[in-house]
Amino acid sequence: MDMPLLFEADCAGAEATIYVRDGAGRVLSLPSRRVHRMSFAVDAAPVPFAPLGYEGVAAVDGIVAAQIDVTVATGGAAKSGRYSLLARCGRGWVHLRVAGVSLVDPEPGVDHGDALALLERLTSGLTPDGCVVELDPALEDALPPAALPLLVVRTGGRLVALPAREVERVAPHQGSWPIRQGDADERVVAMGGDVLPGCSLAEWMTDSPMDGAADAAEEGWAAVMTANGRRMAITFTALDGLVTAPLTRIRRLAHRRHTARHCIDPERGAIEIVDPRDFTAPAATPTSADEGEDLDAPPSALSAEAEPPSVPDGGLAAMAGPFVCVFSRGAVNRLLTGVGLARVAPQRSAGAFPVFDLAALLGLAPQDGARMGRVLLLNRPGRRAVALFVDGVGPTESVPDWHALPAAPQPIPGLFSAMRLVGSRPTLQLLVWDSLLADRVGPGFAAALRPTLLGWLDPRLIDGDG
Image 1 (cartoon, one colour):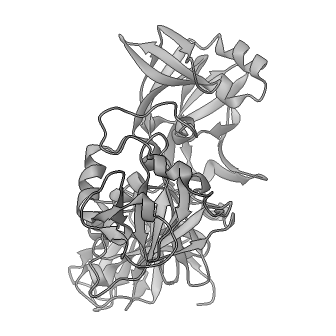
Image 2 (spheres, helix red, strand yellow; image 1 turned 180 degrees about the vertical axis):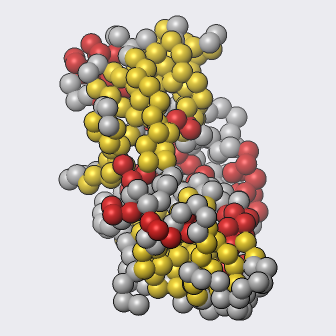
């Protein structure tokens, strides 16, 4: 089989069944309408916190998705299946590693297991798939594709689509005004007897402040959303309706410096889909720190240090076991000289930085013996810096493009905003949220951090030998 096997319309009906075999020889039945294609399985890049059977993220025939090994999930040996099925479950599209596929029952009269029920159970703890999978155009009508509900709003003469699942409520607001210090689009929005941080869609979208101000004056509606852990209100002129866009009608367009998603609506034409997280990009230099946090006051020792070494434009990649975490250029203060943990003290001293273990934070088991690695100092705007102990570091490039997260274990979206596969035997790079460093640490994340604390680093020894 040199080419992928596509499942044609006549065997993809609601009643059609295909039969898959795992590496242990067990046969499972699967509705063919849930399967799009069959191809050869490939190596998957591992992902932190992976549950049983979750191999990682794989790109099969150009389609990036989570890869599930059915044989491992049923108690067999890993990677004993040679084939991959692109299958649709409740969490989105996944690559299903199997040992064989048949369009006719290989064991008539035998009660087979339900592969779909097994797949739903294996993926029940994962987050929904954020990737847009474009199926083969010839089969667009053969399979009922998953769809994305979108709230279409209008500001000035432009239409914008917001993911409807992210919208808590929509209503006219009782007032919206610019904040005293901040970007032109930032607002305080009065709504339902409360005030919320907000964003003017007109100001956010325009390159001309005068045009944006004129349109923003007419924005009497607001959509309350939660993005990056923040509840906020987006103001707009009018509500245009709710549409359901099949994923086959969503296009990701690559421009010179960014990518954008558009849905093709039969009545309205192409509408840009805006990711709510784009409204919450933290300011580069906050004016004040939150009160009451243990790590608030910026240490004076940093101001006396020489300029940190330059960080590549693409950021810095920090390695922990098989995992690669990418920090943006603005998040990295410096990479400390030397290696090892010799400068990390078990007791806190005045002005010391906490040092956390990236490997432990990503769920890796402790290593035996002395550990070699590097200490990476990270900025926390308006607060004391923190340090990470990592296995190694390296530069990153601006290519390939970052993509939305596929179906992944629950902690992943809270730590990372995007992913990409790099190399012929791919390594998964995960882009760390800048907001993890800019925002106050939430109770859940703080609880996960505590057991990963390795000790404290005296800023006066910041460039000493490791």
